[in-house]
Image 1 (tube, rainbow, N blue to C red):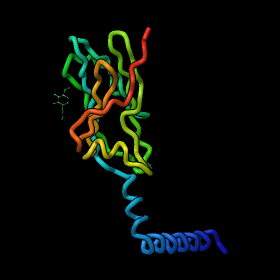
Image 2 (cartoon, rainbow, N blue to C red; image 1 turned 90 degrees about the vertical axis):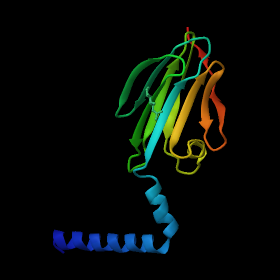
Image 3 (cartoon, rainbow, N blue to C red; image 1 turned 45 degrees about the horizontal axis):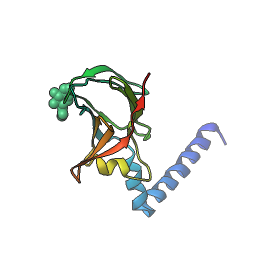
Image 4 (cartoon, rainbow, N blue to C red; image 1 turned 180 degrees about the vertical axis):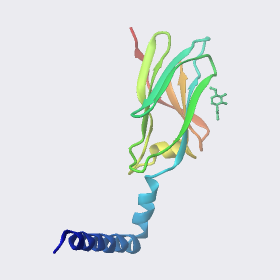
Length: 153
Ligand SMILES: *[C@@H]1O[C@H](CO)[C@@H](O)[C@H](O)[C@H]1NC(C)=O
């Protein structure tokens, strides 16, 4: 066979399998859509007491969102589209006057919906408080403590 016939046979077989896969299991095609291109928003809020400022530095593999010194009640927020491969990940470093914490603020969930449930709908609100870092559980209207502070010397 010549190269071009060979590659069109390969293409045909590929398309046949793809068509079969998509038509035989509608659940699968819905799953494929889930991992791509959704708009999300993340917030990091200074909910500390006693007038303490909060240092925030958030990043992804491609973006450095810069450093911020947040006054009480102030926040950093950004929105983004998840990538097609489901590898979108953002993490932050937070620091108070004597403690710090470093953690993921957004990741794409493939099996569980722990984050998605709390961020309902696609709006994740992290709040730094005196006794730890909380994530707002939007549907239940409550803040849940997720991370403890570590001493920063
Ligand atoms: C995002 O943060 C800015 C300032 O940091 C604030 O003015 C704005 O209201 C925030 N946006 C949302 C949607 O909360």
